[in-house]
Length: 209
Image 1 (spheres, rainbow, N blue to C red):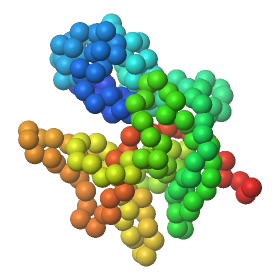
Image 2 (image 1 turned 90 degrees about the vertical axis):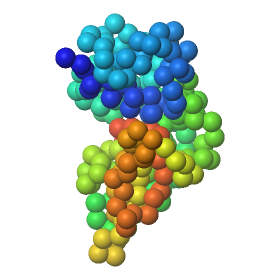
Image 3 (image 1 turned 120 degrees about the vertical axis):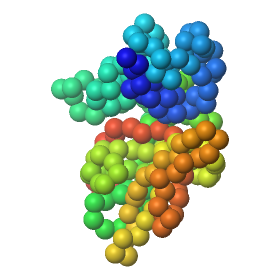
Image 4 (image 1 turned 90 degrees about the horizontal axis):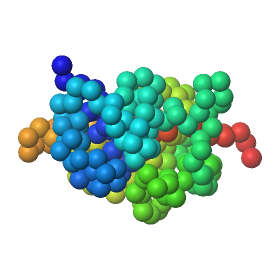
């Protein structure tokens, strides 16, 4: 039986790490490109041989990559510890998405992906941050999203605004390839923000300064 789950998670891990192709992943890990293509396509029956190397190269947890349990970044903390990242942080403007009321801006500390060897984001000014402190329709609570400012074509997970009862709500949609065509789940009423390049479990300090 093919393991489509691992292949799909590998593709997601590559997107989160900004690795644009299997060839780049092969060069980064030293793993045979043909093997990685088969793994990404779900053709590898037992993919555990290189899981640790693939997890290290993409910055995700090997347990999540292999089994799908938990989240991509659960390896950043112990289960009995609060959410603490090992990544360096930087100060940035963040759009907070409350369950009720309008989104608002704060200054806070976010993961400094731009100094992490597993991410290839080159210019912090090309990205913006959105924070979901409590669960909403599209995201669980304590989710920090790094989003491209520029709207570029291609597959991925995208953020968008949609106005419900005169209040802007945050939603997501996906774009995927079906042959040569791009298939989108975007609602026509959505105002596109940009492609999500990274998702983190994160505890942002929202207390008044």
